[in-house]
Image (cartoon, one colour):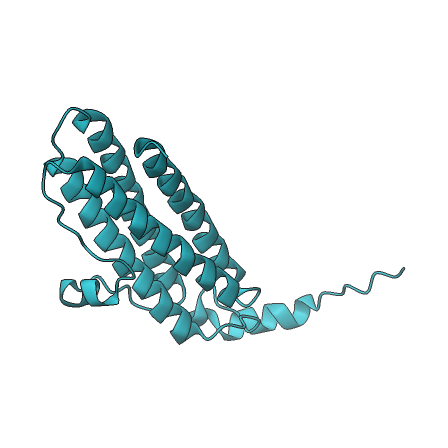
Length: 177
């Protein structure tokens, strides 16, 4: 078997120097950058809505299991905000503008914002588990769509997906399932 891998460093250097304004996006980037930015902005919106829902639930939870459930919601809220920031950073790297516009966040989100009544911990858990399952399905689709066209964005989405699956598992445990 022969190894036919050859790198044309001179060409790569010339291309890098000629297109400095493109930042990390090189000529070998195969995805539709504008479409990836739009998809990631929907991810930002989704994560902001999840952050808001978890935060509200953490604050408004009442009842005998409040401490444990509220702590879990608080932890998840922090991680959802981190997901939004990671997606926004990738948008910026791709030359796009992260969209945190409150007027459109709810419309672009894959999940709903639910304001469950304060005393209904089980319903809060179910609402959040439903949202996590939606996000998991959507993010799996995004990862498949990206494939090898944008491995960096795919890895960002894979790392977020892993944490979303952990959230769903935590919520299922709290529900006794």
